Length: 178
Image (cartoon, rainbow, N blue to C red):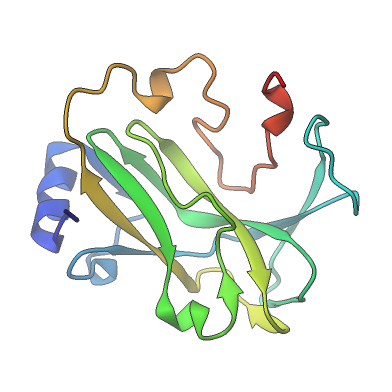
């Protein structure tokens, strides 16, 4: 079951969902539109190693936009900071971005109860497309949780992405033991 607009508003009032900045016009019937933040990043190395801390270079999207190219993997960030304390948030692309050939996440569309931060986007494109800071990029939907949560994400000692800033965050896979 997905929360409706009235349920999302109730949860915002209760403080179990926080979206900042919040704009009522961005609330759909069962989702909230999020926007592309001002910063993009790319990995420094052409070959990535899952056991290594792969570094990124971040840059601001200029006023005239930035041309994304196929075969380049970009990290972006949502303009919105969110907190979700009683629901499972899912970040999905908008049909308008999909119709431009923009994928906003490779695999990480699901958040966890207790996630607090800006969402890092895993962006790839099918053909060259110019993007702009502040453009609608995705939508958040919220699912209720069945049962008690023993440890929320922001309370886990090994939470690698808790408190994400308003800039892209590279993979922290290297922190895992394997």
